[in-house]
Every structure is written in structure tokens, then in C-alpha cells.
Length: 132
Image 1 (spheres, one colour):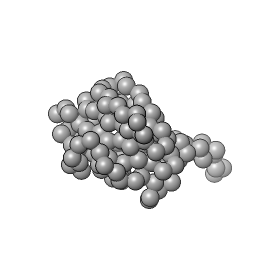
Image 2 (cartoon, one colour; image 1 turned 30 degrees about the horizontal axis):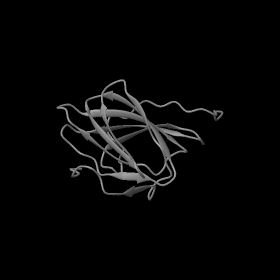
Image 3 (tube, helix red, strand yellow; image 1 turned 135 degrees about the vertical axis):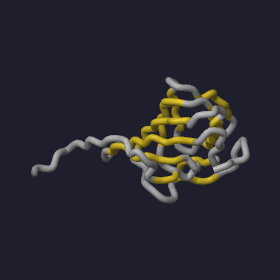
Image 4 (cartoon, helix red, strand yellow; image 1 turned 90 degrees about the vertical axis):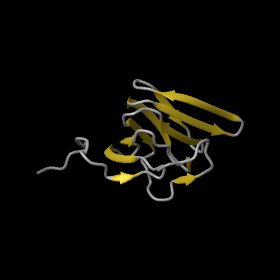
């Protein structure tokens, strides 16, 4: 069988990892220039606040409701998370998110460049007390 230059993958039925922020991660496809994941934060949970050393992320909220806090230098923002919302997390931005609903908060994210692994996320002070 000849190797192909593309990848096709269905989402895993169970999480494959726990992100540094505490959310449950299902790894999707990746290329040399970017990667994609789906992650879930349980109802009522608050993530650990982190910042990324080298990657940017683009999020798309699939299901659930919550809030995202972002801060860098003097800029600070709190955004309501709801299905259909897309947002960015540039390199170095401190962020934390919470699930304010009674169902899982489900988000799909693209990471550019691909997630490099252990040590990428820096735990930092956040807006809320983390529960995961």
C-alpha cells in the first residue's frame, strides 16, 4: 500500500489526554504546520489558567455555555462562550475558561504551529479558582 500525503480520522469516543488547563482532549488531524483538537470541560468546571509559549490557537465553540478570560499586558477581556462563537488566543496571552452550564462545554481548536508537547503551556494566575 502506498503512503498518502493526507490524514483522515474520526473523533475518538473517549478523551486521549488531559490538557494543561485540565480539559479532556480528543486529538484530531495534524499537518506539519498545524494541529486540531476537540476538548471538553465538564458542567460547572473551571480550567487552570495558562499561557502558551509558542503556539496560537483558534477556537470554535460547538456546544455548551461558559466564559473565557484573556489577558496580555494592559488588554483584558471576558467573553461569553456559546455555540457558533469563534475566537483567537495569540502566543503569550493568559487565558482561563469556565463552564457555566449544566452540559459539557465542547470546543474545537486549531493550533499553529502543531502542539509541541510537554512544557508548551505555562500555568499562570487566572481570574477564577480552578476546579480541574
